[in-house]
Image: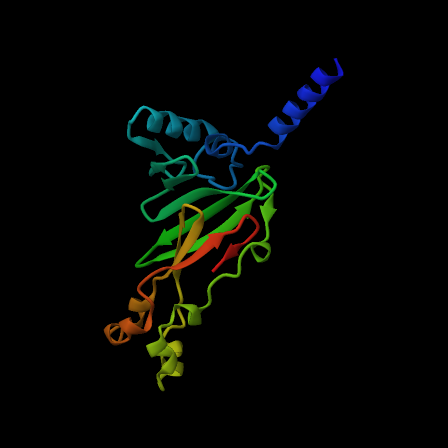
Length: 207
């Protein structure tokens, strides 16, 4: 009897410690994370994707939103003509998932904002998880050695970057070079063409 009780308790403990899946977390997402879509519409998205149908819904702004990607640990919703929300899960050391939300707005060029949450949708401070890339991180060796680097930095005061969740990592790209104007072509070799990749260690994102 004692052995059965221990087994049941262990099984219950494993169940309690298991990570929630992406679909469950997406359905239970607070409305404040994606205010233009209701819980019912989020559920419809998942049903449409499961049946191989186009996952489109009218949003509260009168436009259309569409889920374009649904994978085991990642999804993408085009929230509007200019907006996109990416949601990705990263496994933590304690067996739970870290939820990563990336909001991207594209005017002329994409600009992203990143947020992290526990499975209970409690915010996790950025500083506890990642040191976001600075402008110098995007510069090539050619740029760092140039005499006119300070001038280039002044031209690049408007600094946008996009963030893309990938399997086990986040990728950052500098996206506002062309805001410089007619000098942009001259400075293209000063910005790294490949994204900055930050790998998830189970506790933090490491460059």
